[in-house]
Length: 430
Image (cartoon, rainbow, N blue to C red; front, side):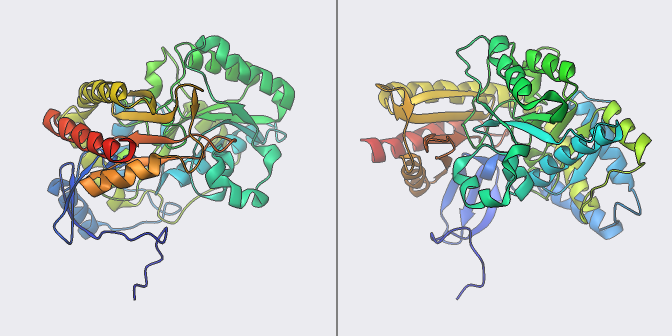
């Protein structure tokens, strides 16, 4: 009998080794990691230099509590990270995972307004669908019906107004005016922040607004005096072909950027946020402390992993590689779309790509349970790991497949991924 509390009752293969874009189980089977786990393993598996950097840090300084000490590795990493993403004056708040990071961003936005003498600002506007994490606060912020439903009684709905998702077929600036209308209905004096994924991940595979959308969002947030939080947990750190996905929209800078997943690329738990100078200075100039914290925040070994990952991303230009290999993968998916009409939409940016599965006649994604999970299972049987999802829309629709292999994937490995996916599609769709 196993004592492991698994996430579901399905059988799990036991992984024993990772190398590049491949994982191997205890039966000797090889799997191409077409989703980097949950779009985490950005640099690929088995990079010995990352482990060596972590071991050296653990031998020298394994832990300090953030309320008592800083560390040289945290100081170095914060500076390098801020420069890498193009926000050199921002301050880095380190945590262990994306849910902690988005929840930290929400609490920081709330305290910012309290310190400014506006305690009536408590609402955080997010979109439907969206996914900001699994902790109760980050789940309340999420617009993802399938994951929220069980826990809805524990949430305070009036604190989390929801905006409809962007429509990439519309004029971006006009589409963003929905935020202004929602602010007027809620009362802008009650709203602390607007949080959005620049390119949507798990809830609506690789959906991105049209040009002009975030430029107008930035203006609306400034006019209303609210914090704009860019949730780049999945889309950041080069995955979309740029350090931050938000840079696709000209001249837009968030007040808080949330990062995770690719920070330590699966080698250690690491996430965090970058806060603009005015946010940091307002909080520190008020009570003198951010009223929040986690035991393992800024853990030196995790931060050392982050430094090593950043070394690799910069040295190998994995941001540029994501753009190049992403274009190859997108073209291959579009070719498959011509063979399989159930692939209603194919879209994405860099190596954050999605397939919406649905009925072209109605223009609607399939309802839950749909076919994404069946395609995912067929792909796994063939040796390809994907990221299927469904049920994020309020009506139970939203059947999709998310693809996001390591940024280190080669052209030949992209071709192998596409061949394995084609076989899985043939198995399920005929």
